[in-house]
Image 1: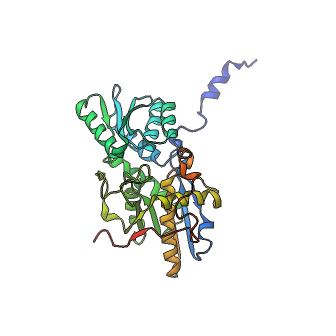
Image 2: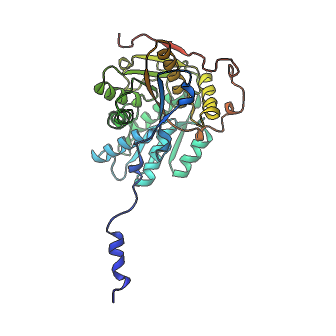
Image 3: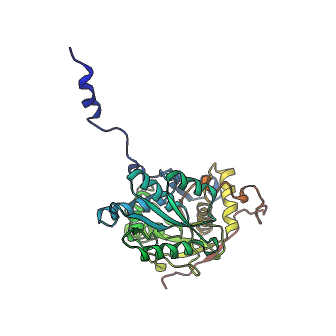
Length: 341
């Protein structure tokens, strides 16, 4: 008579489910039809990056950096991963550190949202808080100081200067966009933080079709409400950033992103972060321009994260200047100068 003793070998013969790393990437492309209902011939699509396991597009760059560091012998047993972050990349590092069993030390401005602080605590990350007045640049300076003082203790990931940041998007994000739009994408819009998303996606899309217009978005001033984005004119410029890649740049006021975040929640059923809302607002500028010119367009932007890390911010419940204007999509300042000239 057959006994149950043989069952375990059958059960364990093939692992079931997927790994945490398998869940990074291959995110859906969502139509934002209600925003463009008045614009014939224009489609606006958002890449839904909060479905990554860490909740943002930064899972892509962080996993690319970590896996390359392990492969190349830079992140070895006994070393801690060290980096500066404004939140999302730090969360991605902390998630991976917990899942893959390596220590992580993060330098971060102390004024990041309470939600981000709680998530990092839950993952068990070690945080070194920096002066909020110094923004992400202060965190970068602190991480560089720690790495220089004790190089044997740390693998300094340096997301702002690590080529594996933009390569994650060159290999993944861009190809997904191309496949999901069946090669019909005409415009790509993304915010600038480390600039990895824009750099990598733009480089690959240009290889696939040089006619694709790639538009960057950044805060319109050094004092802004975009956690993670940089005002390049006044910030420490990431070494991986190449300003000649963008066909044009849109400078985005924080207030306009706040308005768009609330608008997306109330009329599109989407709760997105401030940077994602700013990218949508910039994309809508492009959509209106194309419609006025009588051109068809397929515009893809990055919804880098959801609103779950920002719901404690006051703008959700307070009136934003300009919110009651008859035309809700006020124009941002647009520089149409070809930045490669």
